[in-house]
Amino acid sequence: MITETIYTQSDLHSGECEWCGEKSNELIYTEDGQEVCVDCIEEMKFYEGTMKGI
Image (cartoon, rainbow, N blue to C red; front, side, top):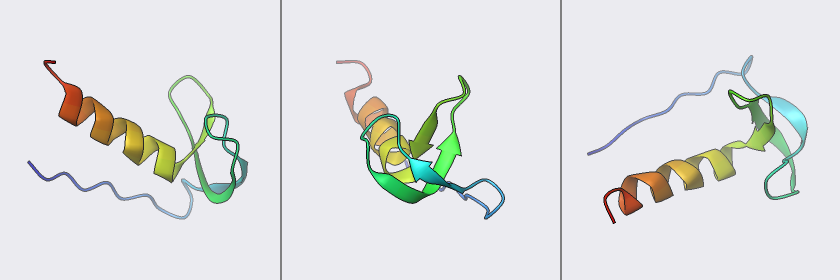
């Protein structure tokens, strides 16, 4: 299954990722208000998709 996520410029902002600590221009707010970089979000989605049912 292939999924595509599109982040618009208005979704993104600059700062420090609360998960990995890296400075990034591609941060988004999670549902619980954390500032997380797109790389961490995509990594989490991949992990959840591949480890489902294990």
